Image (cartoon, rainbow, N blue to C red; front, side):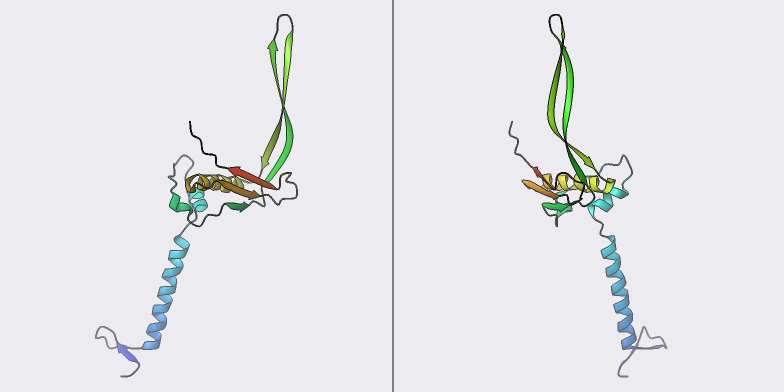
Length: 152
């Protein structure tokens, strides 16, 4: 019986090529299921209910890179002005502070990615996160986030 196999003493004969093809098909389906079951940290966070906590681990960010490209995030530059009042002896005094501001505009996914990148930077102890902002309306094209060692 060359090329044939009897399974479990049954009366049905199966061609060995057919059985081999069947096992390859089952193996491929199992591998596909395993690959699709592996979710990214973003997918996990999107599937969480609103108030459910998530514990981040360093292992969650194994393939993470310290440079990112955010094509849908816009950072606008501006000059902010804070006005406050103080009173002197007889007259109120207006105090004006001018400072440089940055306004972030983007979609929820961009901010979710930014948050996970900041968490990954902290857990992996990366000193610099470089973010490219290629959107044409973005006033800032490169943003650098530094992890500073704080020693009280």
